[in-house]
Length: 258
Image (cartoon, rainbow, N blue to C red; front, side, top):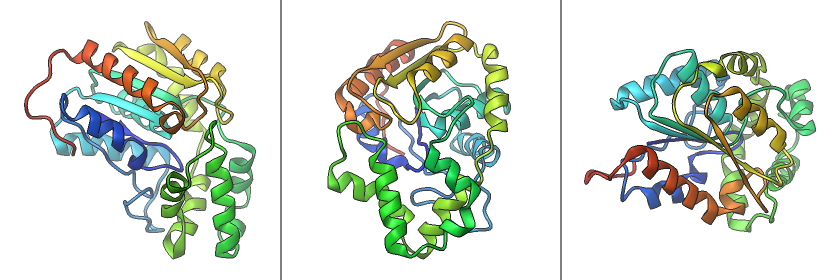
């Protein structure tokens, strides 16, 4: 199984769940280009199209045939495009609070899209305050200081600050429109989880996604915001375990975290 993170996150959000499931499954984590520990070189494109091609190439490199894919936020659009456009086969797809269909983007997100070069030049202490406020707003229960530091850290410094604004500027809703038009082609088991208190992307978006995918089901998670991993870790872990066991059958003995 493979986990896909979103923006402005990294594979760090999925790591505890990957470790918990690694006793039953061979698990893969990755940081998309421009995120987490991956390259933040200004010459490297980071749009949806590039990310989907990178994901397809990575699955081929790993030699994975029909993996179970779990996605959050932006990872929903990336995994859907890899499956629908690049025809990468999956065994199942579980998506949580995903950016997958239009519209998407908070008011701050749209502001950055309009002025990425200006904001990239603000003093580092102002940039850090902006990112901390932005990231902190994604949780419903309030983020633990150590968790907030982990999420904000990759976007600080000479490489991180411009990369933060660059990845937002690269956002193109055209890819989401293409995804939505193709949802009816999906013929694998799909479950969509949504934090009821998600203020970044409303539950209504999850309902639209499920309505467009034959046989898909929506699970609403109470008292959880966009960062469902931190707001509702036990319900999320339980849902993941049950979903994967139902669709993957008995565990093998070669489980690991990649």
